[in-house]
Image 1 (spheres, rainbow, N blue to C red):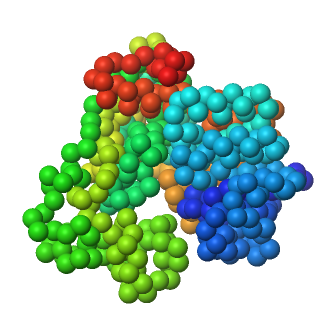
Image 2 (tube, rainbow, N blue to C red):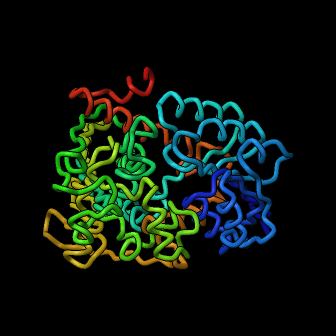
Length: 424
């Protein structure tokens, strides 16, 4: 029987909580041993979330990395702008890494971490969880089987969701691009990664269009205050009213309000009066786009488009091959009832696939969170770090695509990904 993987974590936010709670359901593979976070209530919550009441608690990354090595794998679950330093120091301390996406806020820092992983011979698995979903694994299987023939073009879409956009990219941690990463990286680097994985060829060049059009002062309702708690004339009729954190959007509250899961209505309202999440969505300092389109050319002439929008929900994909067409994802499940439909060009015959999986209730990212943790134990034991399904070395391409796309959007030019990757 293989030895368990001992897990430690720096940062005890939502992603770390998810990974460690899943690890607790897989006791044959994992033991959660230590966490670090400067917020005491988050540290203490990990005693329950991790399934280990005796888990070692540290104040921050400096504390946990100042003691002898505690675990086999360190989860880096800090905010985007604080991945590089703790990841580097953890690798230097002998840890292999589970690194939350995006890798880093700039391409230079992405390269710095990838180079350090190679130099130190550390395994760094990037949380591109879509590669571990039953849906995309099935799509990849169909492509590799030859059923579609040669892939010529791909269209992919991600609907962020209007409230998710408001929560995370208008009011939240990823609202101001200068303080984190461009949204095409922060939200969608794993969508770009999926295109790279499915097509199986490097991306050569990108063009991109989009911007911030809805969540601006220009669309602010007349007479509305800076905060939803200060007597907005629209009241709860406004779909973005922050008081909806007390009803239909309660499940998001614990991600940003410490103790929010058990908080009383008056406690939530008091928190909203001083929290960024209590602001009117049309009066924030947000700069993240609310829609963006990326057009890509891959080696061999394969083309792809990716649309990210706040005003839809779920992911969908269309793949056009020389023998058949594949469509699948949220939009097609809703309209035709099947996860994936493959239509043969010759006779119109259709093969329908429905993807079922047992994720023990951890359905985040279409089962990708659970799939990642199922795979992590073996991924960290593969013969070479580069062979991991979502190694940092593989993940450099998706980040280069994303940063190149943002440059293309801002400059109105077509950007060569190879040049961007090497020079930026």
